Length: 62
Image (cartoon, rainbow, N blue to C red; front, side):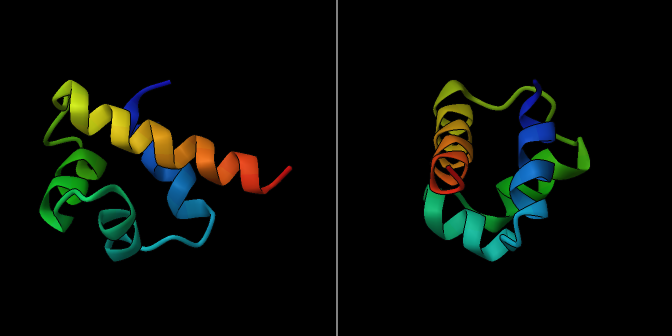
């Protein structure tokens, strides 16, 4: 699954761009660029932060 798809899934779970930025420690601009497809392959650390948030949300839903 692509990082952009993970962001879309996080947003579907009622997280805002602002909340994602706060939870991951990334800038809102970075999140928006990934979401829009402007940044297709983010740095590995950026990807890890988004993936970690995605799995944390999934874990909470169990």
